[in-house]
Image 1 (cartoon, helix red, strand yellow):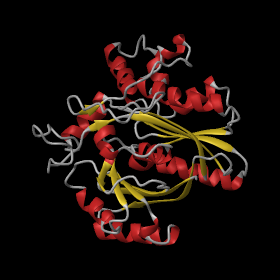
Image 2 (cartoon, rainbow, N blue to C red; image 1 turned 90 degrees about the vertical axis):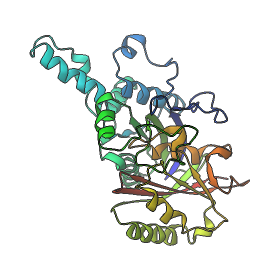
Image 3 (tube, rainbow, N blue to C red; image 1 turned 180 degrees about the vertical axis):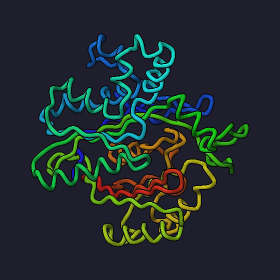
Image 4 (cartoon, rainbow, N blue to C red; image 1 turned 45 degrees about the vertical axis):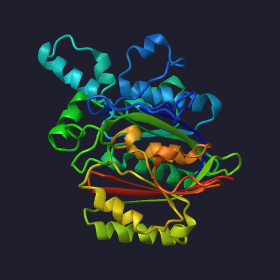
Length: 344
């Protein structure tokens, strides 16, 4: 499957005028998305949109404008517009099921992003949302790969969107998935404690089966449910041997290392499969942790410019680096790896 267009709204300057040399830091343990001016969305529609829908539609519209002949829309999200869902549920109590705001209800379902995008672009093709927690984006990609196998020549928008909702943040914080605070002077990866920092964002891709003018090729994708690091290591080793040949054929490993010491064993197992010839990069110190953050890693692999030095744990972005392995672990049970080949 080939990737042609790609956009990203995140906590950094990744949309429009991209600038990854200067980073914005977390505030109160949250890396909030830096939303652009949504020029392509009519103001009357924009003010009724929840944040997740706003980011998803805003990230997709530049791709639709450049590639108008889209055969379908496939979105991966773990929570969708959870903030609007909670607002609607609170209204049921506050107004005793009386004068409820329909906008909050419409924007509250996970499929609201794909539905709103389909309505705004008059796209009557395939429209679906995958909601699989930390593997939502990967399942959306798998869906697109299956569709392209059945419908050669088609083109699809595949995206990933999640927001920091007060409801989900509080639950995950109480469950220990976010750090209470970082030690003064320490970075995310220097704090040997449980939890990470919260993030959010929207990433969109235009995919088809045509190599001409493509930015990158997604050569392989696999997922695993396990909490055993040896099983994860064997899974990654088999994936590399089957699709890449050898670990030395991979220029850069991008991991979802997030500063949570409970997950470090999985990332250490992945890194142990590589020699010094492969650069090791990580990205969640600039995006935060959220269920579909692996889409940002894929976006980074697709960018034309070299990856910033500040993303590398070891090694560096080599001139001409074109082979990437992306490995992400979500909450110690959901694992995914993608093999990406940047086009020359």
